[in-house]
Image (cartoon, rainbow over all chains, first blue to last red; front, side, top):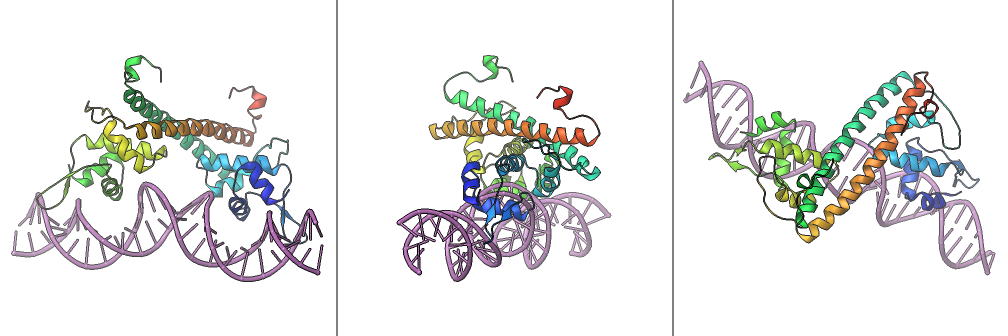
Length: 129
Length: 129
DNA sequence: GTAGAACCTGACATCAATGTCAGCTGCAAG
DNA sequence: CTTGCAGCTGACATTGATGTCAGGTTCTAC
C-alpha cells in the first residue's frame, strides 16, 4: 500500500511515517518512480511504534528494539544485544514508575472532579485506589 | 526557605522553580532585596507539580487546578469551574488510556528481555498480562 | 496526453519544559 | 569592607515528534 493509505489506516500522519523511516524504524520498498510501498504488516508496526513513543521510549532505543520483536504475524528476527537488554530493563523500570505516577495523578484529578460535583471526596466515599 | 533549598529538597532545578512561578503555579514572597522566600508547604506543592507534569497535564490546566486541591496540610481553597471539571475529566480519560498503553508496552519490553535471556517468551510461560 | 490528486525532498516552525550564559545585585562570614 | 556564594532577570539553545510550506515529480483516470 502507499503512504497515504497507511496513514489513514493507522491514524498517523504522512509526515510522521516519513520521519519513522528516517529514524530507521519503518522500512519501505520504492516503486520505479520512487514512491514508498508498504506491506500489510506495516500497519501493525506503525501502531506499535506509536505505542512505544507514547510510552516515552526514544527512537534510538526503538530502532534497536523493533527487530527483536516477535511480530503479530509471526516474524521473529534478531535477538537483543547486552546493551539493549540493559537499556530495556531501565526503560521498564521507568515505565513502572510512570504508571505509579499516573495513578497518583489520576486519583487526585478524580478527587477534585468529585468534590466539584458536590459529592464527598474519594477518601470519604471509601473508594479503593 | 530560599530557592536553592527548595530546589535541593524537591530535586527540581532552580530554573524550573522560577518557571513554575512565571506560569502561576507556585507563589513566593520576596525579601526586601527581591529574593524569593518559600513556606514549608511549597515542598509538597512542587512535588505535586512535577507529578502532574510527568502525567502530561499542561501548565495551563494545572494553574487552574492547583487552587482546588485539598493540600496535604489541609488547606482547601477554590472549587472547580465547570470548564475545569470538564477538562479534568478529559485529562482523566487520557491518563487512563496512557496507563493502558504503558502496560502494553511494558509487557512487550518484558517479553524481549525475557527472550534475550534465553528464557521462553512470556506467553509460553503462561504469564498473566 | 492532460488534469488533478498523491507523492517526493528539504527546509523551517512549533510546543513545553528545561539548560545555560551573561551581567548584575543581595547577603552572610571573615 | 571585602570576598564569594547565592539569587535576580532576560535571552537564547535544546530536545523530539510533528506541522507546514515550497517547488517539483509520479500516478491514475479520463
